[in-house]
Image 1 (cartoon, rainbow, N blue to C red):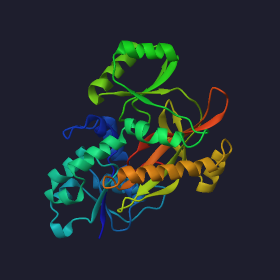
Image 2 (cartoon, rainbow, N blue to C red):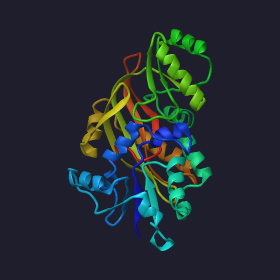
Image 3 (cartoon, rainbow, N blue to C red):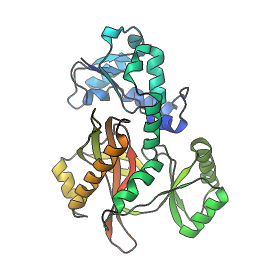
Image 4 (cartoon, rainbow, N blue to C red):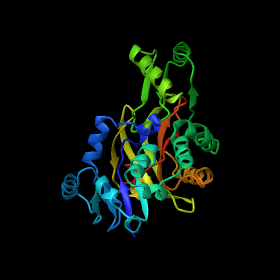
Length: 327
């Protein structure tokens, strides 16, 4: 029994486009080529990893500076020839979306029994949006302790209405409902530029709405990682401290869990982390039941509010897929 692993870094872009015929941009294709071997970091010996170029993947693996599983690299041509007896027991992509499902089933119809249904894909997409996290998770967690902070709302009005919001608030953060690693995030100061207006219009045209959040005085970015098992039970898997620039992910802190907790403890009472963790487990176990199994991560941050008090934003966004923090 073996699993088939797939690294599809275009996943978040696909969620926004929601189109099976979508062609990933060049940057996503290059990322997939450069890191196609990374499922070997979490796979088990004997598992398969789907790649475009086996020789390239083997070269990448030889240069990897970490222990990797003894995997078999395969291509879509290899999958096309599989019989029922030769199929993997499970498929684990970076993230589930209509594009990767379409490619697998088109390649070999036998994969139909190993991929999510259309209904499940719709639910995964809905729960992957920033709107879902803003409505179904953030308010529930913030209400549990005065040391928590955070708000976000949807907007689907006119540019003129948005300009009025910017005028009244001074600075805001605009986010597309679906995007990743800081892409789809705009920090607005005082007024919207012409390029920002164009970006807003494109997001509204493609995704139907846009998220508006306050600008926070951030001290530290961190995240919690989780796993949902086959019985839809959510369990905590670890802490992740990372750095960003203009909202875009840069790199992770590779310290162990104890040291990362100590680092966060310089700013807040660490008991708050357990409240957040338990709240996320409770909320996601309810929403994910029958809809999603696999890894996910929730980005958070420590901020200083207007009264100079240090607080925790417990749900900046949820990544309903594997994350760099888990790796």
